[in-house]
Length: 393
Image 1 (spheres, rainbow, N blue to C red):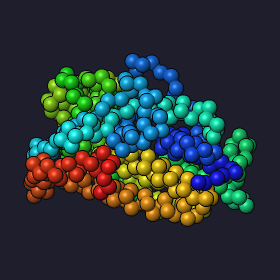
Image 2 (cartoon, rainbow, N blue to C red):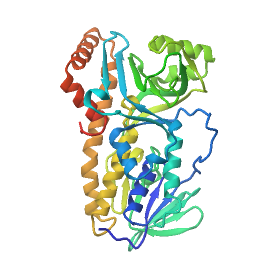
Image 3 (cartoon, rainbow, N blue to C red):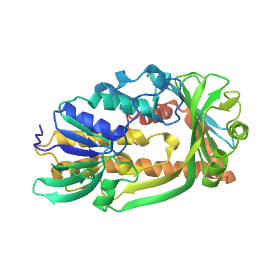
Image 4 (tube, rainbow, N blue to C red):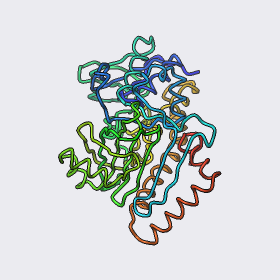
């Protein structure tokens, strides 16, 4: 069991960073969380928020183990019992139903604000945790016992390990000066909340269009869905500035009539999609997890799940070592996670290229692939286990 005289410092108080802090706290390891923005802890229950995460079954079990899942109000998430996917050109389709493998659900669609609040409240008052918010890092310098972190407030602290969980534009990653592989998808993702005429049936609906995938993800209200529409950047910017009626027509044309009439309920927003992957996840006394280490296309909804797996893996490596922040433990973490993340990054890029092609032979080939996979139950079952986080690619 690891013992630490100085706290591990986590930069970033999002879902992944807070999960990691909770894991260390449960092992009685001191941890400080540095977060620049105060989390939203109160809001109108009737308000809508399109910022959601697809939490797979494995991640949900992790959150249950930490006692976090039970803190989520039922109106903040919907089970994801099935997934219906089709080709926008050929109309070939495949369905994944958790009942086919005897599981209650593939996962859940959860409001980010609710999950962050549940994690934050779980950490508040914990004897091993100090939450510094708002606070921002200013400088990092070598120290005999690890690193000396100075905050903009002037506070300084010694730490055996600083963990960057501060997102795609990570301060820790920049300080590490780790090279990053970067790829521009040439797309932006539009997010919004819509109301559907027909109930969503706790099902995720996704159509692959030549310009990118459009997904409708179920929310707690059976007629509300969060949309994630990945499309050409120019089209995305055009759509988010259109009148509601024009946007509704565009969704109808892209998605079809499977859920009846679809109406926009809030202001859509767009953000660019960029693939990033750090060459090194670790350096002496430093580590990256979540989006600070990797970002990928949202078409499979695996970003947060990969980050949670990073958090659990790094925590386990630290807890099982005799010295928190040891190079051996950090290298073990990197070896355990980098291959899995790399494979997922390239798989998502491959899917984007495959379903973005309008070449007749490519359309015919992928349509045949969808149809055959839909009919081959053992393969479908395996893909569901991968999506649930139970098997690796």
